[in-house]
Structures are given as structure tokens and as C-alpha cells.
Length: 272
Length: 259
Image (cartoon, rainbow over all chains, first blue to last red; front, side):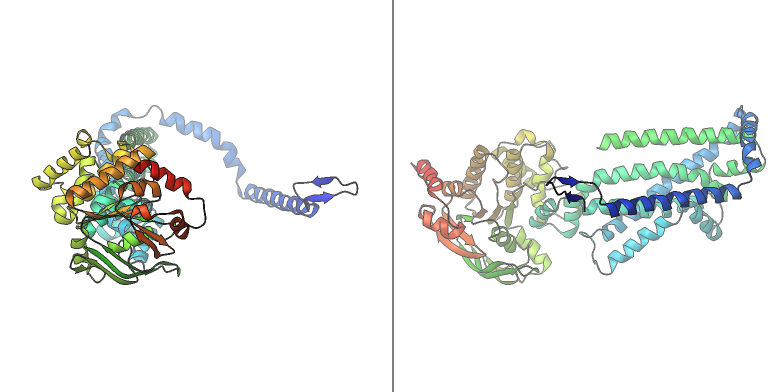
């Protein structure tokens, strides 16, 4: 009981009763004990000499990696162009497929809440739950290595993301605007074009550039498994311990990501 | 012109919003629908153009019975019923002109409407209407840039460009200040007189209704409690519609307006 009446009539208020305080303390005790035990276990599993060595090794790699091999750049233009294309085309294909899925998944626009909506939600969940690197591995097995596999991997991975955010935007629209267009005698498709689309257009544009921005980053690693782009050069350079090339590639990726973030921030700012 | 026969609406929750309402509105008559919140005013006008599906009963618009129509025929009949909303219900991100022209959607095919290629006669009519309500210079503004009164005028244009036989008006003044409210009510009633339009106006402001309309219907718990001219609204009548309250202030305000 947080409130206790004393015999002289004053009422004492405490945050917790004695029993609650005790339980609280016991939970903390157990928590700290588990933490200490885990720490100890991780420490036992670690080969500490390697860790003590880490700063020296890291320093060593850094000195080997600097300066970057600038002349390697001429071999990187093409792969980085591929990477940007994979991201852009993948995002476009994903958007084309995500729009109908989103309309089927949104409660207020789905043709059938009983049959179509669960299928749309399944598409969203299944495409979202698998990483694009894994999609790329699967697709390389199916359609062979190369840029095309990368594009499709990025596209499939992005459908769920775009469709989910878009269907949430569709569900949040102002219903009276739709009602007003319906009342004019407009057809189902006209209601969509005049009552719904204008309301979700800002969300759609925002989602597109956001996903494109993410896809630039994701497509830089696709080459690691052979799905085209700059990742192929990265994995090659890593395998041959060509550290000056690795550092140059990382620098190029950094610049590409910074530029894509700048572009998407500009676009979003222009829409909202 | 419009005839309701035993129009009934029971919501899924079991609430009976309308209890066998009978109503006959002749051509050109402007009618105010008053009653407390939840009396079924909004449901009544939405049952007429079937934004809400009535449970039973019949709605006759001229010679056509509306409750039994399929979706295509219903859309054609909806073109004859213009609707004006409480919160204007303009598509906020479209321009004033696009909002007005959206009243023609029932007459224009999908692809033409998507490309915004409306017939020149529709565009002419849109400009004429905007000029009539004093918003000609606003045609290119986006709807969300306008004030409340201006938006409601655009809403009126959108309803009128349908070339309707009937206006369904849902609380047109509830979001507006007193002066703008009067202007909007006056505008609606003038336009109805110009075009010989019938109108059903849901309204909370009894005094405002008395000022402008020819006939008042009082709705309580989904049933018609009063049907008569605005002068017949006595404190006793208002008590049967709304419940016990001192109604003299409301009525007196009207006496002054009439005098």
C-alpha cells in the first residue's frame, strides 16, 4: 500500500509499498547477476591475445591502405555506374509493383478484405523479411550472375517496404474528400484518381526517394555475391589483400551515399 | 420531385437512425432539417444519394426509384444530386478549378478526367460559377490556401456544376463565423431560387434556418416531429424537437430579424 495511515492521523505516501520495493530490488539483483555471468562467458570464449593485438593490426592495415590507389579509379567508374543503375531501376520496378499491392492491402481500398487483403499482406511480409543479399544469391542461381540479378533482387526486396508505407498512407486519408467525389457520380477509378491519389502523392514521393537512398547502400554490397556493381571489385580487392584499392572503394561508396542522401533530402524538402 | 417512403436505417450496432421517414419535397423548395445531434439528419441526406445504404424504404427522385439501382445507374442519378459538406470536403491538394471540375466527373470518361481534358463547355460553366460566387481570381490557387468561407463557395460551385435537380447540404455553416454563415446560407438560397433547385439543408442554427428557408422539418430520434413553415417554430415546438430549454432567446432573435 503506497498510502499508510499513522496513528496520529498523518498519511504517509510512498512510491512503492514495501513488498513492491522488495520485488523491484530482487529483479535488479537477478538482472545484474545475469549480466555479470554473460560477460564472464563471452570473456572465456574470446582469444584475448588477438584482441590485445587488434590496435596494432588495425594500424597496420591503415598504413597499408593509405594512400588509396587513385589510379584504380578508372576501373571503378563503370561498376559505380552499375551500382547506381541497380538501385534506381530496382526502386522503379519495386514502385510499379508496390502501388497495386498497397491498394489491395489498405483496408479502405481493398477489393476484398477476406481474400485479396491477406494475399497482399503476405506479399509485403515475405518480400520484406528476406535480405536483398539473400534474394541476390537466390536469383543468381536462377537467372545467372550479373547486373540484372541485382536489379531484380533490389526490386523484390523493396516491394514490401514501399507497399507497407504506402498502404498506411492510404488508410490515413481524409474520408470526406473521397465521399465528396463519390457523391458527384464519379466512377470507382475516378474516385481513386481524384479523391485518393492527390492525398497520398506526397507520401508516395517521400517513400520513393527514401527507398532509393536505402537501395544505393544495399546495392554496393550485392557484388560480393556476384550480382553486379562495385561490390565485385570490393570482394576482389579484399581477397587479394589489395588494401589501397579497398580504401579507394570504401571512399567511393561513401561519396555515392552522401550524394544520394543529399538528393533525397532535397527532393523531400521540395515536396513537403 | 423528391419523395421518401418509409425510409429506415438501422446501423449494424442496432441503432435505429431513421424510423420510417416519409417526406415529400416539391421542385424548387428549400427545406431546413433541424434536430439535436444524433437525430439522424446526416444519415437522412446520405441515405438519399446512398453514401449510406438505407435498410428499407424507398427514395423517389422524379420518376426514378434510387434504393434499388445498380452501381452504374446509381452513379448516373448521383449526378442529379449535388452535395455540400460541413468541412467543405474539397480535395485539398488540387486547385480550385480542379475541385470545381470534379463535379463533372460523372459526365466525363476516366482517361479524359485523368488528363484534366474537360469539355470546353464545362470549363466555361466552371468560370461562370466561380465568377458568380466571387472567386474568379482564385481559380488557380490550391484549395488549402483558401479561407473557410471561400472553400465553402468552391464546394457550392462543385455541387452546382453537376447541374443537379436537388442539393443535399450537410451543416454548411457549422465551421464558419456568423457573418460568413449568413452569406453562405444566402448564397445557397439565392442559387436555388435562380435555378429552381430543391434543397435539403441540415442545420444546427435554428435562427439562421428561419431567416432563409421556406419549410422546416424537425427530426428527433430518427422520426419527423415537426413539419411546417419557419414562423410556426414556437418554444413549444422546439421543446418537442430538442427537449426542455428556455427557447425565447432563440425565437426573439428571429423576431428582430424579421422586423
